[in-house]
Amino acid sequence: MTGKPETFEELAPSPRLLMGPGPVDLYPRVLRAMSVPIQGQFDPEFRRYMQQVMALYRQVWRTGNEWTLLVDGTARAGIEACLQSVVAPGDKVLVPIFGRFGHLLTEIARRARAEVISLEVEWGTVFAPGQIAEAIAKHRPRVVAMCQGDTSTTMLHPLDEAGAACRRHDALLFVDATASLAGNPFETDAWQVDLASAGLQKCLSGPPGISPVTFNERVVEILRHRKHVEAGIRPPDMEDGNGPIIQSNYFDLAMIMDYWSPRALNHHTEAASMLYAARECARVVLEEGIDAGIARHRLASGALRAGLEAMGLELFGDAAHRMANVTGVAIPKPAGNGDKVRAEMLEDFGIEIGTSFGPLAGRIWRIGTMGYVCRKANVLRCLASLEAVLRRNGVSVQAGAGVDAAWAVYDRAGGT
Image (cartoon, rainbow, N blue to C red):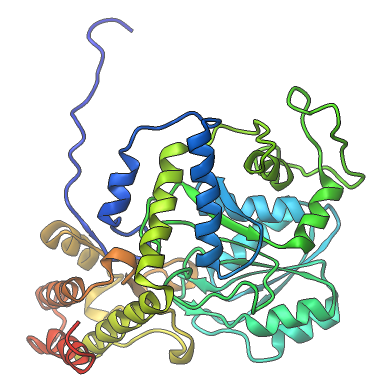
């Protein structure tokens, strides 16, 4: 190829209000944290930041787990690291599926060569009390892998029963909390969750690209047996475990532990700017207070839902188990599959809302009120814009009804 290289224009993304199921707008402090100078991964100051991240996320996860760290990569990287590291070929893995991301856990467990047993319920519902515990008693899995919140259906699943049942039958409980952490209660230790992973791009209001993970001593014992340190960085005094090698090098939690430990074995090069972002996300969440943040998410979703219903729209799913940060709403018939409404919301008002997957594709929109987006002004702006677009597309909506209903919710809560 000859001639002048094609370099394209300088980045100038159009401003958006991201009110889909994630990613969402970043906290301004997080954006600023990502712009500070990076340091070398073995710089003592940078290692101190790593230790601070571990301490911060213990508080976010509400755990005493020593091993609370970050896996470089999007939220799926954290899931892969957890499942690849604890699931050995032939292990039984039970996956309760109530949406798209249960199918993802099944896919990842199968790739780890597990014997996967899946349970499924209709999308928009969760499992009945006792159903998961009965399946654990029947199948005696080595690992139970489930989502807490599944944004594809906007449902939030109770976890306390699963953790207790796993302990009774010596199974590990893995939870994908990507969609729920910091916007809904999550009690790692109290609910007896053995290992969990998340991402920054939902209620933590950070960029996708790094995954907070936590795991307890039951998991550490498995990792010790599966430990294998690659040649070139292995100290002479370190021996491999006697269990099956973890199939992935990059997602090997045993080696990632050594990287985050005082040994600082060079497993990978830490994504410094992403670590700074994760650190600031946790600081913002903890300074507000986890309980206060959850209450803010509940208030915003309550106002949004009141507004949607006042507009004559039907909310989706089991009302008793809706997430506090994502709302599913049935697409009215005049709007077809909803794509034209979504496009006009984005093009004319700069607001992104989501569609869904699988059996819900073209049936519901998903509207997120998460993290920095989870504010009164954004809820009112979304409702007013949606009303205008719906009316333009032949949907009969009473003018101002949605905004008035949301205002009333905020007024009853003190106007915040």
